[in-house]
Image (tube, rainbow, N blue to C red; front, top):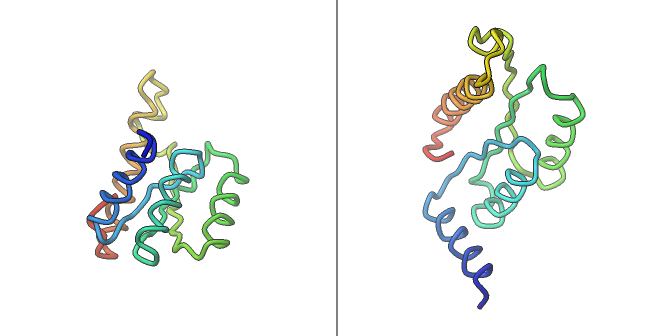
Length: 119
């Protein structure tokens, strides 16, 4: 078994240990891979959470929705407005930190309502 195969099997073991998992799904390469592996391992016990942000092109949200719809993955879209975050709107060098912090906080809240303890 190659080192890559070993890491892939380890990832599946970790995901399996959660039982239920929420994935912060942007539609990018990393979150798409994680979501697909999580679905392969957990089936219906995985939920994708995507933030609909004003600073992200609408087609990216549509692609994320299509990916989930085509695979039967439960997908929750959270309406966000990063411009309402004072630290983001001030446009400092670390604005992305404040935006991600806000989005992940919303994802955690939505996940907990569904009984999901791992993101």
